[in-house]
Length: 156
Image (cartoon, rainbow, N blue to C red; front, side):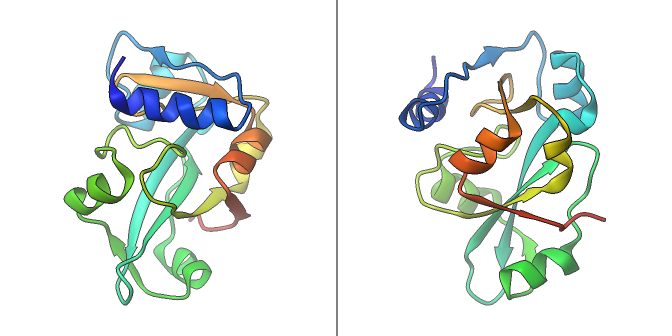
């Protein structure tokens, strides 16, 4: 396996989580692709969306249901600063992952995280496991705990 997947699996194992990375037959870069690959509802996909603070440059992770969009105004209230899309190079440097395969755990640096309330509606959700072709299934309550996220309303 790749170093990216290993880092995600190590983070899951350190949290006593038994989730395993699954290689999908097709790319899972988008929520729709991941939902097709996992044969699940699009909202069961836990998307990892990264924004950068326009004042501090800090990165913020928003774990959202696949069919939802992050509302930048609501997200800015949560972070206390205006937000913009993070530069892909900065995302890779700080998290260790490329956009299209960013997982909610296993980042190189700690990241302030928020989780969409919609994900709590499911017994299992699927998140990126570090590559554009790997995902893992997890109970959303466990995902909330191991990602150190704050359950929040930040979607449109």
